[in-house]
Length: 416
Ligand code: AMP
Ligand code: GLY
Image (cartoon, rainbow, N blue to C red; front, side, top):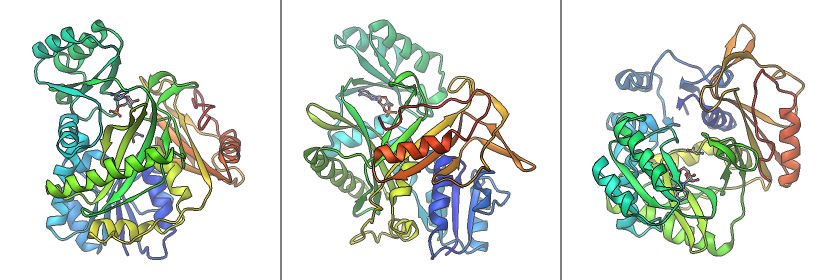
């Protein structure tokens, strides 16, 4: 079976690594892919934005499945374009992708379908936003840009002044462009977070093991928010929380997308806050999490390819997921200056060292001759498995200590 993978991050490198283990795989292509992933997949000179060319390539190369990693192609309707022309895709339709691309769409979907989430108000203009913020007596409060802002459009505001500043940045200065045209004002939920992902075929779901991201830059959850500095999988949640997540989040999600004809065949990621009142949904992503995927896939024993195909083809019912029973820790290595102004072009040492029991997934790297250089904020994910968290952490950090580049940053407390 031939597969085309769309994307270029650490998540896509991990997907390619896992797909390569499938005995069903014929050829694997990646668009655009990355230099790190280039050892696993062929990289045709295509851009995913050229829908016509991508489609022609799929037909010519007899691609059996297109797997879309990031949110942007989903939100732009690549799935709809390809499926209309007979190409099978893992990844929801454009309407389904709105559940990530618009916070308003997500909140209203949850409200209509009875999923537990924080109370909210949609603010359509800066004037109305200021009025509502002045009425608000409860701090902190959360201000969210409606559209896609690469994980940066959420501010936890501890005072009226901070909330007003967020409105000014999002709605007037438009620091995230059109993504800030609307804003969602949301009740702050205290608690512990977990990432819940499930395969969805439009009719049913199959939950992946729960994982946890570490979003802040520095140890002890300090410093600025990032795209994610590391992840662990599996994370064991109390049985009663898991039961609520299955019944009120995942089952209601699937019932909702079915009722609303969203043609959702791919993966749903619910960011969950475990509050004193039970689990509540913070946000949806309509794709695999990054860096969670780099910690989830190494603990999945099942062949990934038939599962992705089953989602795309509406044939998920009765499928099961077999796990290795191990724990995986994945640590993100970021460039100096990340997240504000990441440096680039630093030679990375230690990648070709003696094999250790860890996987290195590339994100922001570039290959020149036979050497790798940094080329982005999040550079690598180092993932290792062990019989428990302690063993996995030891292996991951031992592997990471062989790698170095100028200015490199990583957290020392992933999984603690
Ligand atoms: P989101 O992009 O909506 O997941 O938000 C990014 C991060 O902001 C989440 O992972 C949480 O840490 C935090 N966050 C978002 N919404 C809330 C909320 N209602 N209460 C507390 N924290 C939140
Ligand atoms: N780990 C958060 C995300 O993938 O958006």
